[in-house]
Length: 113
Image 1 (cartoon, rainbow, N blue to C red):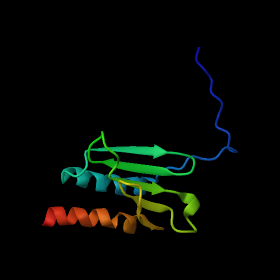
Image 2 (cartoon, rainbow, N blue to C red):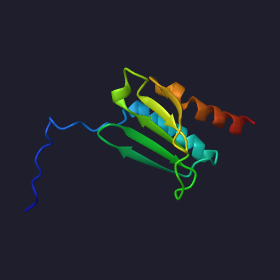
Image 3 (cartoon, rainbow, N blue to C red):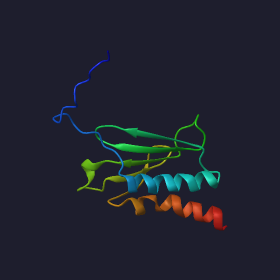
């Protein structure tokens, strides 16, 4: 027959993920950046301590931006972080909207200007 896998143990640390509304907002931003010609590829990473969305100009390069959700930092500096290409933290906060604001402003300048 087949292989029977045990049900996951609740004592092990849960994997961090994005909620539907959060992922919709990030993917909407990604779609607008693709339409503007800024990004061409993405990756999503889920680990026990964080979830990350990576946006690439070209798939062979380092990501231009990394959007991270770290719930362990929820009560300290905010669980959301926008990290640049060289690894510097560009923006950190408790809400997703203000963290994505620098990218959205850049898109508005490209489309409007």
